[in-house]
Image 1 (tube, one colour):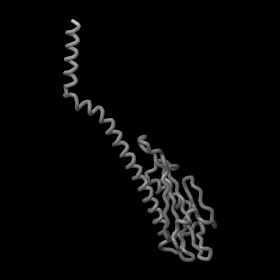
Image 2 (tube, rainbow, N blue to C red):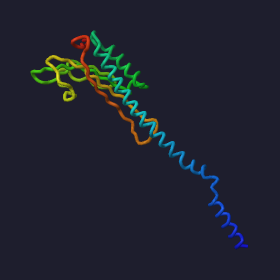
Image 3 (cartoon, helix red, strand yellow):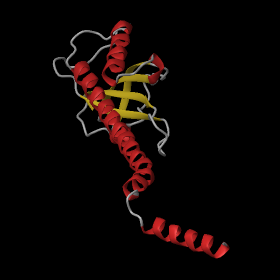
Image 4 (cartoon, rainbow, N blue to C red):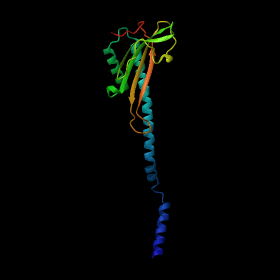
Length: 188
């Protein structure tokens, strides 16, 4: 009897190995988690790049808005500009974004930029007046007395899935010239 049982087992095992009716199901069970992981990773990396792009565009929008101002910038204006940054970047909380606006002027005698005034919101410190801005090397050539508006924004990003991308902060920077007035003034 043991030979007959062994023969039947061998026959059934051979038939099972040659049967290909369940291949699609087995392949799907193996590949679907991998496909889901690749989809999630692609989505997270695309979302991070999109958020970085949105942050840069929000920075440009604020810089353009400030360059068109003809009145003094006061704390209420800065609070509202920070609120606009939160709205444009779709931030959920106040501490997810920060904004710093700095007006610098160029002195050709010293060949240096000087901070005229600076205001910040969202946990960032304003630049000290009278000193050189941190970004002096990135500023363009200018004539004596020219002013630039430096807009710096920070936007926190947390990925939806853990696919190797850590939470990070997108820091963006831009500068523009005042358009309709010779300078952008701050309210005392």
